[in-house]
Image 1 (cartoon, rainbow, N blue to C red):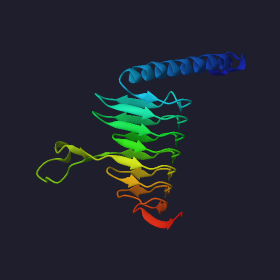
Image 2 (cartoon, rainbow, N blue to C red; image 1 turned 120 degrees about the vertical axis):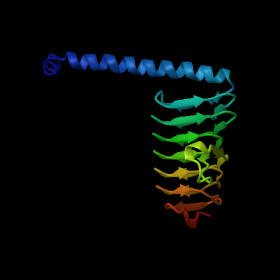
Image 3 (cartoon, one colour; image 1 turned 30 degrees about the horizontal axis):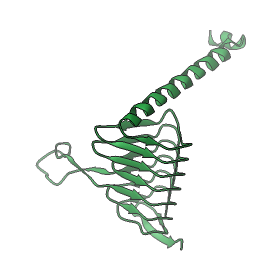
Image 4 (cartoon, rainbow, N blue to C red; image 1 turned 90 degrees about the vertical axis):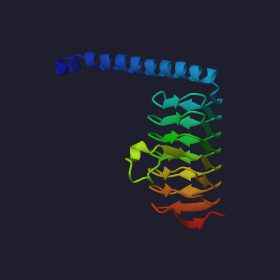
Length: 196
């Protein structure tokens, strides 16, 4: 059946119609979500583009503030839990499939490559008489300075500050503060040089 519909050109027409309907739905859904979040105190800057497939979850009295000229690509996920403020500065670019969760402040002119995770929470695990999932968690804010470039598949964990003008290489895990102008690579976040 599909071969027949393709041969007579009908399958192409059906594909175009359903693609347009899907795009209309995604754009409408995002528009409604944006208006709802703005009523709760979130802000979306001038000339910013957020792909309609970006998932935005804001809970309780939390808010998201997105600066001017920000671009967030497909399938990323922004999460602000109770009393969090997730802030993304002007002229920041966030690629596809990025997760940003919690009390996170991202400066201006930041580049975040695909598949990066920035998460301000962690599980407690000190009590060996309890399962880890019974011990709760803890949160510490994350600050990413201005003009920072974070490479693909990197992980930024709770409580760290990444200084202005730093570069975080691909597949790097950040568990400690990074000085400004640092170039950092690898799972142990080794500083290989200074940019200044």
